[in-house]
Image (cartoon, rainbow, N blue to C red; front, side, top):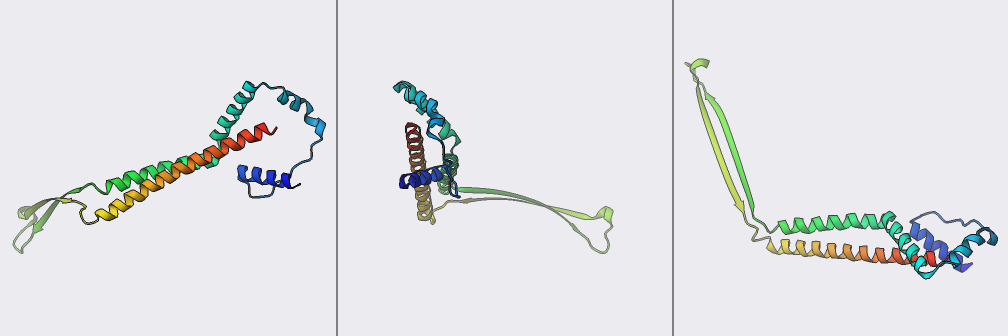
Length: 168
């Protein structure tokens, strides 16, 4: 009974279900032919099937898909943090027309003034250098943690799938 509870908990965790699992009772002879077929497999065929099961399992696992996206986001975070060390250049252009009127002018002889301004500004991040370095270091650690989480989850899923197949 306790072994069944452990197996139910493992399956519930692997399938990422929140509700309890109810196992249907199956008579022993219902799958006798299948069990004899599985027991008759050669070792190389078992390894081929195990590889196929692991491949399909990794392709359809939501945890691995989410971790792949998290890894992409963390990689973008490293790129953004690295960009904080680069200088900033801004170029602004402004063009303004104004009309000066006095009481003797008419619209046909009005005096238009044209004002143009160009502004180029540069900024080099000298003072926030330590903050930028800390942000870059944190982003790199986050990326490494995500990569390690992905490897660990992938390994755990492979082991669970292989054990599940071999326990048949």
